[in-house]
Image 1 (tube, rainbow, N blue to C red):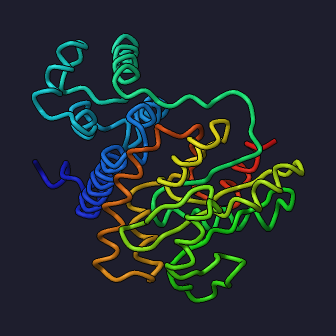
Image 2: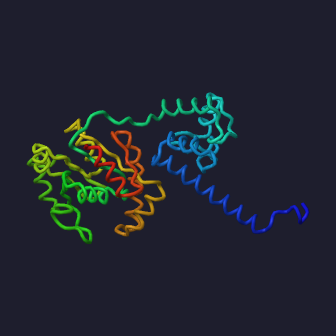
Image 3: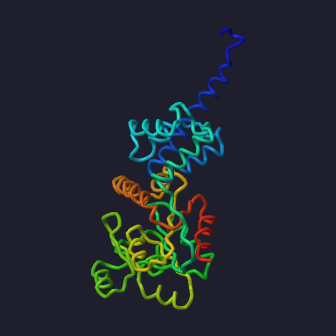
Length: 298
């Protein structure tokens, strides 16, 4: 190529930076699907809504292998069955191929459907560092009609936490007594370390007086509440992305490296359980997420 036809050096450098950024964005989206931060259907929706986006530019082969339990051989069988070329990008799928892929995803990895009806008992759970406490605190400050339950825990207070306001801080002997006397609606050991539980009496009293009650608890506790109160509304709080969840955990600075690694392993397991919940709310903005959760009680 002559100098006259060769792109200026600055243009080539800019194009290279854009290509690197696009690859990183696609890699982040694949992590989100692999860790179940977003569903395969959600990624497909983003791709079809904007074919020029990172999601739209993703090859269908990359997309399928990002889904847990789909390896290369299974991926190839899926593409053959659906009649989709492996060189296709998600944003470039034809209408028949889109429908076939949607139908396949819905049959193998169905998205939860919100339950009809309302309950005055809301349960907010989600992976570690997703911001459950921050969202719950915002609801407490802006929705005085909603009672935020205070949990009992055997862990020590973090800086700024007040006994009786953020948690009831108790020792193991007192926690054993609460269990023995049937005073907890649910209880669980979290991260193989500390015990948490929800005192039953304040919740019962509030519900009897017509108030809405919000429980901000972990996955194990949410399952126990569902068993004890099948009509409870279970809400799963999601991070905007897996990378954002990692950044929040690291930025919090309350755990050492070993504890962070353990919590991230736990987060993967917790994210995989989101299908057990009635509603999903993304915590991309605390105020917006809090309003979405509070609206479920209205």
